[in-house]
Amino acid sequence: MDYSKLSKAVSYALRHAPWEYELELDNEGWVYINQLLMALHIENQWESVTENDLRQMIDLSDKKRHEIFKDRIRALYGHSIPQKIHKTVDVPPSILYHGTARPLVEQILSEGLQPMARQYVHLSVDINTANLVGKRKDSDPVLLKLDAEKAFNDGVKFYQGNNVVWLADCVPPEYILLQ
Ligand code: HQG
Image (cartoon, rainbow, N blue to C red; front, side, top):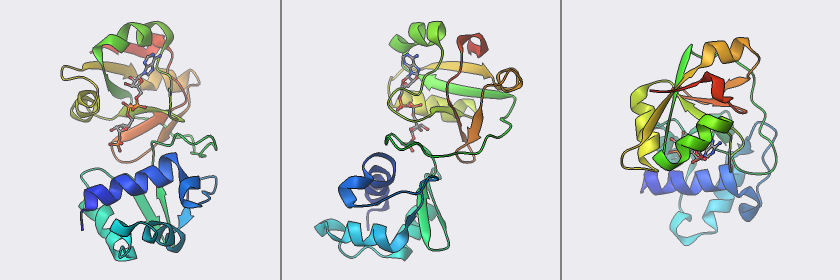
C-alpha cells in the first residue's frame, strides 16, 4: 500500500472535495471512517483499503495531517471547502514562522497574510518547518517571522492545527517581520 498516495487521496476528500465522495463533514471536519472507506472503495486503486490502512497512513506520515477518534476521521488543517471548519481559539507560541515564495512577499508585507484559497492562514512553529512549506512554492523561499504573542494580545485569533502547524484567520502586516 502506498500510504503517501493514500494520504493525498484522503486529504483531497477531507480538505477539498468531500462532495465528490458523497461525504458530509460535520462542523469540525469529522466523517465516519466507514463512510470514507466506502467512498474510497469505489476507486479501483483503493478497493481494498481498510481502517487499519488509514491508521498506518497516519502513523507512518512525516506530518500529522489527519486524526482518528473512535469511529471518525478528519483532516487537521488545510481545508478549502466553502463550509467553514470550526476551530477553537488557542494561545499560540510567542513566535510563529511562515515560509513563502519570494514574489509574494511584497504583497504579504503590505496587506498581511491572508488564507487565499484555504480557510485559514497556515503558520509553522519552527524555522525548519516553515522553510519546508516555502520550498513547495520556491526553491529559495522567504521566511517571515510573526510576533504571534502581540498579535494574539491585540485580538488576532489563532488555532492549533497539529504539533507544528498553527492557523489564523489572517495576520496583519504589523506583526510580520522578514526573518
Ligand atoms: C501566500 C501544506 C499574496 C502564502 C503546508 C502561501 C502547510 C499571500 C500562499 C499547508 C498572501 C497560499 C498550507 C497575500 C498569503 N498576498 N500571497 N496577502 N497571504 N499568501 O498552499 O501556507 O503538506 O494555501 O504565503 O505544509 O503554503 O498539504 O498555504 O504561499 O502547512 O499537509 O499564499 O499546506 O501542508 O498557499 O501551505 P497555501 P501554505 P500539507
